[in-house]
Length: 328
Image (tube, helix red, strand yellow):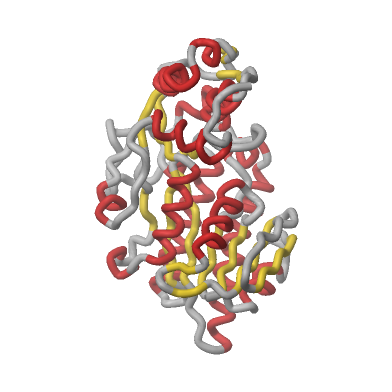
């Protein structure tokens, strides 16, 4: 099996690569070749099969066609600029998040027009496709009315994935990812970054800024769960999806205050004292339009799984990123 990961240098892309390399197979098929692509050169893992790392901009002319010319059996499309950046730079957001996605889908279609080719394509969407006002818990039938440019770009991507799948050009699965916490590494431009920052930094004895009130509620899953969603989407029987190809992934609803309570249980009052509350009106406005809770029955019925408590999410971070130890 040949697997292409677009967005391989990002956090989820790196963890997905590591999981695939460790397993050496997916859905009972051996992995013989990995192509890792991103705007910055992805690191090559130690792998028994062939590995190619490529620095490329998916929205640039010919970039997507060069990747699909290799005819990967499975494509993970994870590449995107994050919500805060897409909101601040309108043109860049649409170029990367929408035009790049369309270029990829078109490249797959055109490659298949040369001779039969129909890869599985797993697309990471977002809960940002939903906008306020919301029901208490958003069900699988709820309509998408995004209130950010990022959410709009992802919603259009979902519709394109449906149509290209319906036409038989590819076998698409879209996953609306929850906000992923605790993200390892440094803070990024995502408006949601503080959800991770207020856990990650205090767990290693560093200060973190909280830009919203503690009663803000949101929908979460761990990086470990996110990789699990992608692997399951890549190997599942898609006939169960029909033509509704995008699934809202399961997750956990919690307030910022409940995050902080879990941090206290894991690392004590000293860690909590490192959180500095500094309201940011731009982030407050963006977060106010985000969904807070979901009833992800469809995903659960299809075998997707996530954590059930913030304590589990913190524990996964400590195990995966901190060697099982807490402290600065």
